[in-house]
Length: 406
Image (cartoon, rainbow, N blue to C red; front, side, top):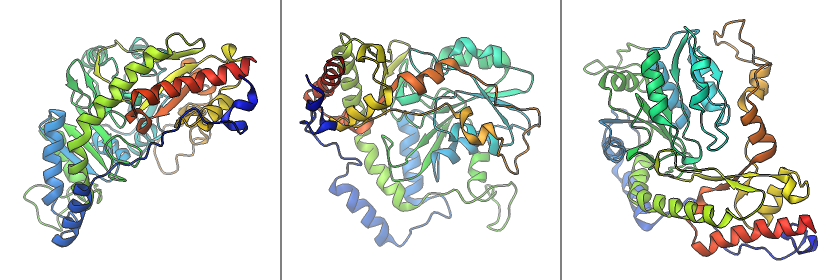
């Protein structure tokens, strides 16, 4: 294989399929049209189609309650604030995730404490959590990154031992399971995103699921301008805001939810198949399964890239070549969250973070290696392809390797 054969250099693509997202059917269009024709577009009373979807999603997740809101970031923020944290409290989070997992902690006037990830799963490493716990620690936010379940038994055991709240960040994990339990239903709360790229999407939106009635009532007040059950319209008890979604989003989500289980199975099966196909490819190591997950949602299919098996080809160049071959893929985060200017420069504006908090000396070696050298992502809509598509993904990787090694 010559370098001229690579698609990035004008050669023929390895992958011939397109992978559109979002997917929709006539039923989605009719549901949104009916919502428009109803004349009830907003959601001032948190009822109608919104309440219907919340009931459906709670049932799907196996929880008593589900509470929608404007996005997944707000879902996390509502859950954390409603859990009772105070200014200066510490919250343990991983550094390899979307920045909102950290910024919502700042917005609650709490301190993000970064704990490194497991090299085999890219999830929060339970072996490193207890060393980060202090008398100020009040919560853990494990992220089911890419849809792979965290080691929830161990995390919950640590949380019980130290009296900590666990809020699951399940933004990638709609339909995922850990030992038969839906992700999001294991901690005190589980938070989801319905943003455009997510496995369950309405363009934007978020949701918190919980079995805790007290927590639900507080979150419900915070997302509805501080109103409470039985109160008057202009009676405000807590520092809330209007974080409600529209009836249009709920109509679309109810329709999309009917297809989620089937789509999740396709992604999960394709992930297993890709693992088999990539096993013999030198320099490519898929993140491992077998840590308690019973369903992996593969919002991302992630493998570790070893440039030494590709003649020193940098990860960035490899990722660009792979995308050019027609694989919907990306090099992932360029740096861990704590390396962002926001944290390096402490640009926290009005938030009351203690002066002695300093992120310039934070180093999570596994996360940094994932960002700089190893982690490569294949996106979720590609995981809805056929087995032939998965074979073409692997063929593209081998093609790049052969060209690199000349």
